[in-house]
Length: 191
Image 1 (tube, rainbow, N blue to C red):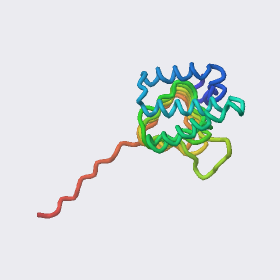
Image 2: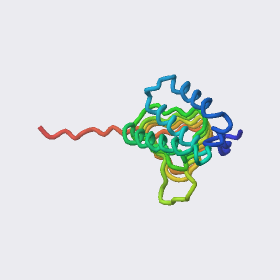
Image 3: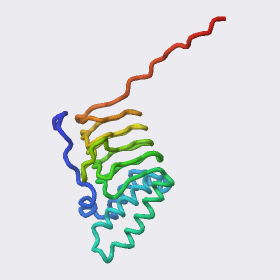
Image 4: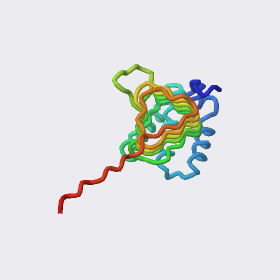
C-alpha cells in the first residue's frame, strides 16, 4: 500500500461480531489485554462488544442485553472514565491501556491492533455530521492526552506521541510528536 493511501476499511462493529462470533472476539480481546480481567479498558471493551452484539439480535431477545449494556456503559463511563458507546465501530484487538479521560466519538471507526492510553479523546470540531466521525486505520498507537478533532482520517501504522492535538488527516506510516518544551531561564532578582 502507498504510504499516503487512506486506510483499508477493516471489519468493525456488528459486521465483525457476525463474522467472528461474540465468544471469539471476546476471547481475542481478553488475550490482547493479557488476560487481566481487572483492567478497566478490557471491561469497557467487553461492555461495548455486548452492546454491539445486542443490536444483532431480534427485538424480543435483545432487551436484557440492552439493559446490561446500558448499566455497564454508565459504570465504565462514571467509574473508570472510559466513554465508548456501542455506535462506535471498533476493529479487532483494540487495547485500552489505561483508564480515565478516554472519550471515543459516537461514530468513530477504529481499525485493528490499535492502542489507546489515558486521556485520549476522539471528538468533533464545530461541524457535526450525523453518522460520521474520525476514521482510524490499523496499528495506530495513541500517546496519553492525544486529542483527535473533527471528521478526519488517520492512516495505518501511525504512532502518535503524548499530548498531540490532531485536526487534519494523517497519511499512513507517520510519527507525530509535539515540539519539545523550551527551557526559559528565570530572572534572578538583584541582590
